[in-house]
Image (tube, one colour):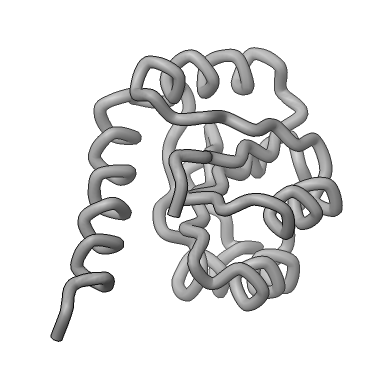
Length: 127
């Protein structure tokens, strides 16, 4: 995978914060403001992860499942200021890599991105 992280959000402050954090870590941030535009963006670029702000964009279990099915190589993160999301229970247990609390802790994001990179290297290693 590339060095691209897709951001799905309508919250400009969240977008700016994520861009800054990702830029400091040499990631390319691509911003999308709707689920449809995210799907189109994922179709045209190799993306390491997608970070979805579930406070500003409405997503459902079904939508997340469709994205993960179509783009299996993309790790999906959610960000929210709420601790619980019973409406996303299925997606959280099966398709979402991690749910990050707002405001984002850059070290926590570093940890999860490193985990994805490490898993990617292991999956490419010869048997």
